[in-house]
Image (cartoon, rainbow, N blue to C red; front, side, top):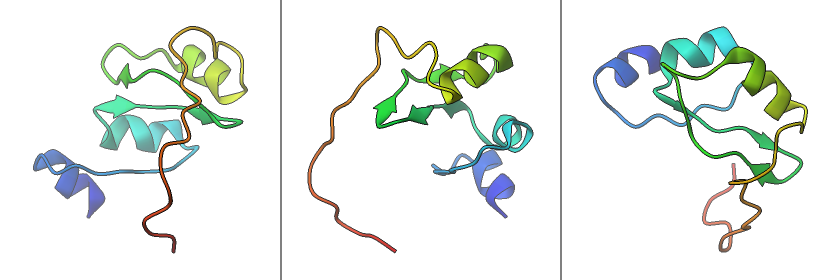
Length: 76
């Protein structure tokens, strides 16, 4: 499972709105809202209220990236 892979140290990319799931699986969290990406948040110090604000676009201030990067290499 994804949880087993994560616990074994594999890099896992998860997209979810379920904070309980993310806190169980992830070491670091990024919030993407309206094309903006938050700075990385460390699970052990991340605050659920802060994440909730970021998910609604609030708090997307300093350190937020709007870099679009390169072309899409793969799309499912």
